[in-house]
Image 1 (cartoon, one colour):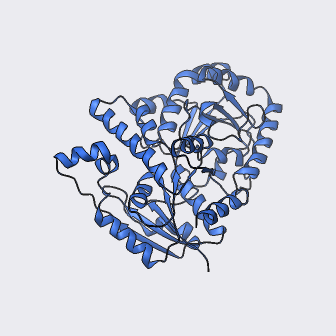
Image 2 (tube, helix red, strand yellow):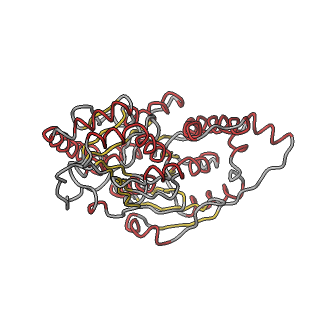
Image 3 (spheres, helix red, strand yellow):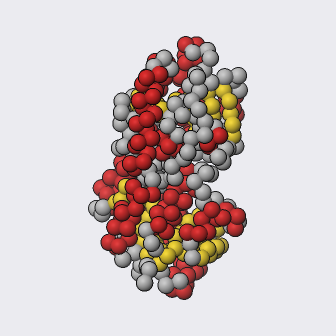
Length: 397
């Protein structure tokens, strides 16, 4: 009899052609299905979160036996001694008001009715609910990033904001210790989880289907940036690239174009002003990248920190583009090697010089782009990760 996996995820699109989070959800679902398990998809509507829409799941209907949407409630605690007690000893209850008996009872009832053998949770809220519900089932936490790290990078906070960031850090550390197993698309964050939890974590990069190239290389390579501005790394990284690199590159190569692919919906006014440039082409969100991602273009990742999982990076390799990135931004993916399948820079000042030189070296562009596609097939496809997910689920059930 096949084992049954409850796949718990936030409401929203699941697709390899949407955003980074949606791509990870799709990748994990496809892997679990292909590995031969029965999957029940549990869609959670969080208070004040995105609403369930059946059309968001059309691409993954064939992966699952059932789709169950549920609404959760948030119960704001009263001020007083218990609130202080939770702040000291139960930071998860202090920070997350959806951890209550109503939501726990709902989750337990679904696990029982669906005869679930293992619970797979995407992102921290789903993992928190499943973990602290004490389900008496193995719980896998698909870790996407450290919330407390991103909170520190986004903006300066007052004392209260700093306190909540500290509490969330306590919760995140407690969570990775309590779940049965963690999965991460970042090798470095998987190692951090192992150090914190004392338990092994599984490095599992995001997978995609190999594409058939539709476009020919440009005579003059474009610089390409892929990713919506709703993601901190995309938004801040692109703005820094424009501040530090763009003018010098344009002066050395006046014919060059910067192609920005992804929604600008959450871009700041300052960033939008910098993108108002005749040499910059902003395409917005593009569902089918085969019409806009040309092989042998230069693809930049200018984020200067090792956070998250770089979920869109495999697409750079898949489309045979030449990756030029800060070393920190791709530290999570050990398959990316300087001089073999990418060019890595210590900082953005160096990135400007590397791109300017690369524009004049067609031979290096050809070598790196070919190696990139080979790396994609070796690591970022379903067949390359299938045994890993089978071993994970069989080991804990």
